[in-house]
Image (tube, rainbow, N blue to C red; front, top):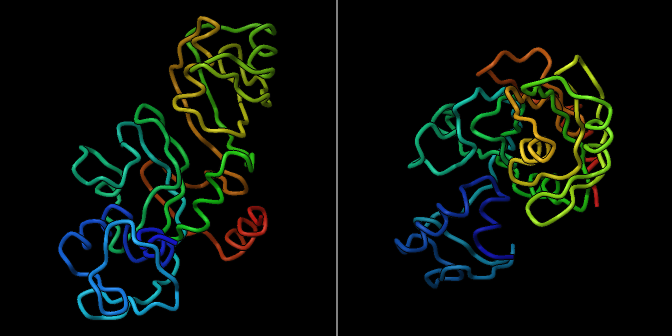
Length: 229
């Protein structure tokens, strides 16, 4: 695999950070300076600052992201999620959640598991609670569940249930950019409130806005079992 992916899987640093280390000639592979995007084997002698890399302990966190925080590991972005958490070890968000939205996002240093969760063809469930600007009818519910034309594609069929005259729960198995906001807009509605409450087997219940908790060993094992190829 490429050096960037290897270091991410090891929980050592991000792929972008790997590029910076390469540019500074701080990484060697079998005694030679590493090149950008270089392919490596686990058996290769890879040194960073002349020291062997060690696999970090895996970190798995469930965060209740508040509105206004951007899901990016780029620290130069204002109100980014990494600076918000100020976690002492290298972690990154698994996927994204709109800046205007709040709710559950997973944070980890396990690149391999993160990639499995994000692979759209695996169709892992993500559940949301959504309030729109006016009451909706059964036509809206049926149309949303059957799929909507947005961004030049048709969304996958999904599960949707009514909570009140203007609020619904929706379970998606894909993650198009601002998907729910664009789906509702296609029917003439505007999202006023959007909260993600579940990712696969991990639920937000019990986590206050802006707070987080470590996943339990059982949750991590279940997540790994569900995402096995």
